[in-house]
Length: 259
DNA sequence: AAGGTCCCCAACCGCCTTACG
DNA sequence: GCGTAAGGCGGTTGGGGACCT
Image (cartoon, rainbow, N blue to C red):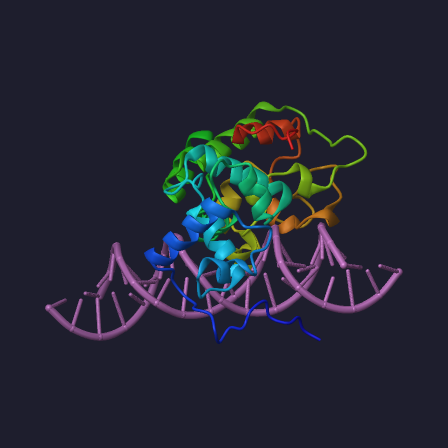
């Protein structure tokens, strides 16, 4: 049995809000507040709208503390970082961004950030540090993702021995910037053994070849994540690893312990 | 200039959770 | 403890402006 609808849809107006409706709702809420009941609010305020619709309009648009306009680099970094850890819990992510709503963050992710990540994963950097920055910048036009690859390249280059994860292993979704891992499967092809990297890229790379037995990070159980995706980023020499999760999260200027 | 396509984002839908009697 | 109503949330849709041909 489905839920009964919150209002009679044949008697309420739908679609874009007019300036008059906005004004009516805003004035009413500033004078009386919600009264703890959104469902009865439209009737009291004289609006032909569903209570849910009023709530949404107020929370996403009319509230005085809402920030309109483009997202800053810092906000973008926060979204990346939080999404990597908690997934698409937009309201939680939005709560970390002053004046942003869950709807804003969700839309921004779906229309901009997701595409950027796809671009990064489908246009991987070359194995060298300078190539990494150039390739990533070309792919995304942002400094954020460039920084990520500069950082990961540095990690590859600066560590002389394979780092293993301490026991017990932490779940991948709470320790890795998951966004790096997403999307690769969509641009991989069987021609490249499932790797988003081309055959020539794989062959010329000083890092690990692409095959099931050689990618991933030594010490992490492979059943906790997609080796295919992880390998796209972390295919690396046997002797190269990274020191800690903090190294990764420091990229985003967000303290991964703060939550 | 006109028509077609793409993209963004406001708004809606419906499920899950919470509050309350 | 149970049922119901309302709130909250994430996924999805569609209108309309921007861009392309």
